[in-house]
Image 1: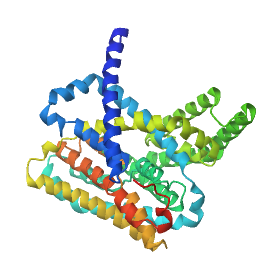
Image 2: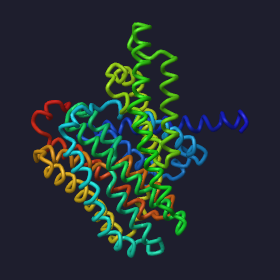
Image 3: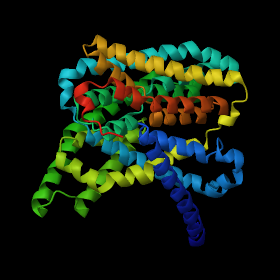
Length: 424
């Protein structure tokens, strides 16, 4: 690409980026005023800017603001933003509570997978028969089960951060259970992808070896890489008499972060899990976490992460719902998602000994699907398992489950934790 072409593309990307930041910030703050997380506003901004709203009245405006040339660069910026955000989410959580809460974590994560899986098996045949009989039934059914089972780990993290609950036992329990569910969900998604792509050539032995390598890598991060980075951080703080990033340490940290993301991607799970795992490996070093938050958090959350949500909204076509049956299908997907995840996690946590308020709060948090659900849905569409109508149904499900998280959490939080939540 010649320099002039690069400059022209840069101008287009900057225009699109300005619109995304402004729209996400404005709609996000409006949603926040009514008790919704910023992520809901960012998804809503994408829907408003896309074919579901402005595109109906002024499609030429949408094409002007988001031409084909900018889609690749914006998607790349979004991916980098997700990596940095997942790294921050991993660092922000205090996992010291988990020794006393491990039973609740396991029970809520197990039931949070089982109940939605059963719900997916129940509704997938009707969805397939009614809306996409031409799609492969087995792959479609696997995808529905996975989409209903996943929780949105990074969005849960943002909600907890916004509500000042990140260092509570409830926050650590919920984020750990969500991490387990997401990891299992991505494993299932990987299996489904392999089965659909390879057909009869799929083999379980290489897959089990891949899982063993993933577990080994996480152990290396926690026991070797994390401690070495923390030791280097303390040394640079002592040498320079400051608890902020020096250029040298920041370069090492970024390189380690990107290498970790590359390794998990190579091992068959999403690169963002490598970023999250490295963040977890560093979470015990409070001064490092504080330095990252003060220097980079706002840029990541305001400038990079909204790009992903906006892109999703631009690809959502509510206008494809051309009859009452489509809306019934959309409602069924959302209802089954809420009943399965909220109900399953609540029952699991309560069975493990948590109070009803804690159990319901965990269920409400686990019910949010936004980011990870949207990624899974995008994979499903890329695999040819979703048409536009089904894709939109699952996008709306992600929005509904995320939008209901804040109000449910505010209603069900234990009284001592409600005092921590900022007003408005």
